[in-house]
Image 1 (cartoon, rainbow, N blue to C red):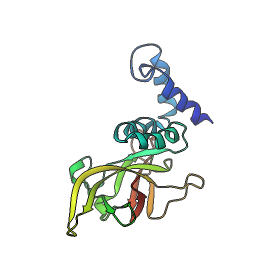
Image 2 (cartoon, rainbow, N blue to C red):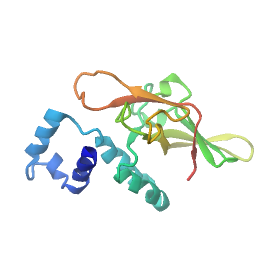
Image 3 (cartoon, rainbow, N blue to C red):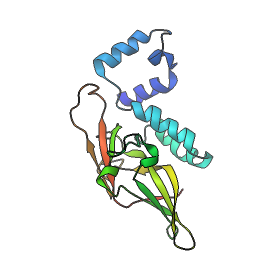
Image 4 (cartoon, rainbow, N blue to C red):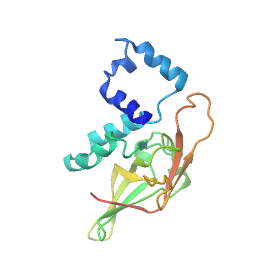
Amino acid sequence: MWMKKMHHLWFNKDKSFYFGNKGNSQSAYWFWYHFGQPPHGLHATMFTNSIETFCDDEQRAKWLPMTKNLDIIGCYAQTEIGHGSNVSGLETIAIFDKKTDEFVISTPTMTSTKWWPGDMGRFANHALVFAQLIIEDEDGERNNYGVNPFIVQIRDRDTHKYMPGCECGDMGPKFGYASKDNGWLTLNNVRIPRS
């Protein structure tokens, strides 16, 4: 219940309350200093904003209500252990299976492990995974269409157990910013529908 209240505050408060000098921003700084970042901070910013930006109207109609109601909790899974934020060098792949109309997403190497995404370690049940899109042409040749975002369910919404082919965990203790739940993720032939 407390998380839904925090979520309501985030989406209904003037953002200058949290980030600016207007109004009583000292209250927000006091809160962050004593209690840390809210566990859904990146869900409310990176995940939700990405859905609003990258999705078409049909996808937004499906995903945004679940996101804004906190029926799903998402994280932003771009950074890889071997590539940092070098987006063009990402090794995670999403191969389009024309027979089943699904994407098959994998982190095929250790260096393609999604590394350091906030809210992933223990909290998120969905991830916006960035991967190289591979589509086979009529001649059987695989073509790379560059990096694309994919919404992947990584944990069951009721039990919070890993979904088939997903493994993730918490990064453990770190110097500073201890309230943020940073994690890692590997995917082994995880299938998601094209729609």
